[in-house]
Image 1 (cartoon, rainbow, N blue to C red):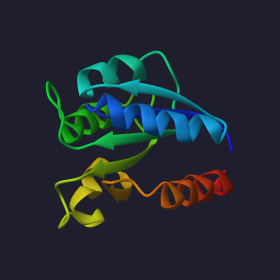
Image 2: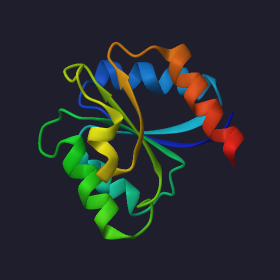
Image 3: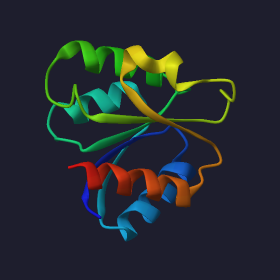
Image 4: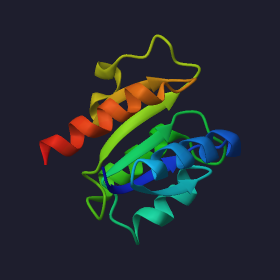
Length: 124
């Protein structure tokens, strides 16, 4: 597998773990600690997929997606996967307006993430 993935996650431990796993699978991973940092990266890099934590300081994941989608610029149509440890009742339908394609609960199941990423690559 290959492609560029933005990882919006405020925990450095989780960021590093995601980066290690996805790098081994052939992805180029760009971490950001909050939505504001993520928006800066989306202006200069074309991402295939974005992993977006919902609860972050400065700018949370939903605000990041809202601003990115409304910008109609680079990455405004990139696939988004929400990752969260505190939203077990969250449904994909609840995130329809943000064009979220999948929800992953923490702790992240990397086998499940790999299958999702593989299915995205098979669609292109």
